[in-house]
Length: 140
Image (cartoon, rainbow, N blue to C red; front, side, top):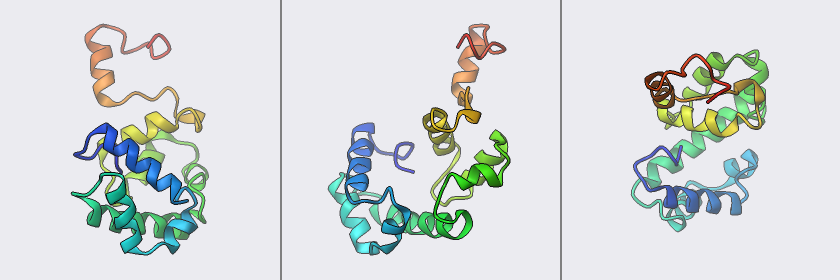
């Protein structure tokens, strides 16, 4: 939700650190925090320009994870039969998440969710095709 946005990677990194420091890796703590607190934390991370919209998206994310996935995003795996395509579609339902964010998320979590490996985004696949190795993901 942050990294693929129109901000620098440094601001995204700092903002993620502020989010983790606020305890929001726990979706229930995220849900309990006020919208104003979310805006403040996003601002502290340097994410000032889109903070209101992102604070709203964080509220919606917490609601979705709690209601649909019983507070545990790992349940998205079970509900989608460890199917890469289904999981990516389920992630894209989250407001504020587009194709680039799905690619960033899947690339990052493939180390935790091994069924996603080997995950390459469309741009990386195009480069692999260009250099002639698109059919051999293991060599990539």
